[in-house]
Image (cartoon, rainbow, N blue to C red; front, side, top):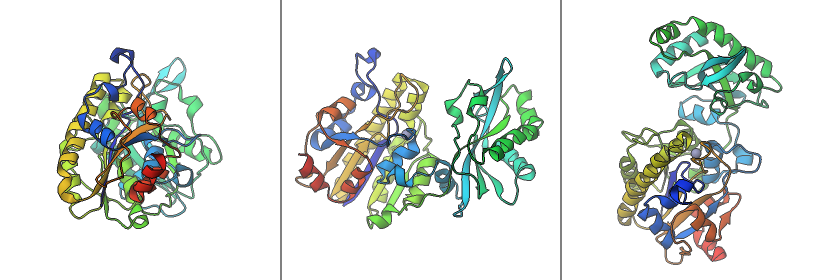
Length: 409
Ligand SMILES: [Zn+2]
């Protein structure tokens, strides 16, 4: 049996007046996902437990069958895994953004959580300076991609309240600095980074070209390494992860999935959709499981770009879902699930906790309810199946899907 997860990040949405009250998924031309819905089993999956922030980290742990309440320790340790940074049991990983501050009146505000999309080369020089001047026996900085880096703090605090910098753009930082037991040290590191970065050669060069400067580090998303039982062991399978995004690759590492590289995978609307699908089919010749993640619809949601989101959904349907459906038969029996991890509504430009639609198509007789008319939020709701908590879905998908179908029929 071949198991395939096709995940369009943030695909789900709310109805839009500009689309005559339809959602982007309903409005988009998606013959392949609709075919899966009509011939398979449709429902809603509740990926965000109450009290959790609707992040892709939480949502995708649920999708892969891990209860976030038990397994979610933070975003940074997942990214550490994809960066190849090993965490000891007492290490706490922090996401370390390079950010640009501005000022409104006398207040310092978060102007840009990307430092004007600083390059990896520039950032690596800054991280080297931070290691020289701020690191210690217990604190180290690790360079990542662009503005996204990592700090590892041995024995560091884990019960802090920290805030993602992308959630406070334009707001005064004063109300959003780390709070809680052990936060003084974290605040002090952020403050001292400002002194080091003020006259840093990289910033002087950027300022002279009119580019935004990296004024400070911003620490968030902290946590210890999660203790996940790899799904490859849980289900006795060989599996792979296809994604351009570090977070997903990191979850894949913990889940025991091989990171499969695809040329031209960008995490944006110009990604190599078809290349990802072809890679999945190729891997499944002797692999059992592939998780194929596409970030583009989420990015369009964050940008509030309705047409861009519809296009990303249509590209995902045609190039990813269509390519998989037309190439899967020679590989034998299969189950394919298509889903969104959480909605990223155009109207809100951020994630929400509402459940997302899923459609599962099985090649096995009797494993499809055929309760869908198309793949959309409303069709999934009308189909009358809700999997909550959402992490239960994967166990059925990888195990006795026939039983799930029997129970819900
Ligand atoms: Zn997501």
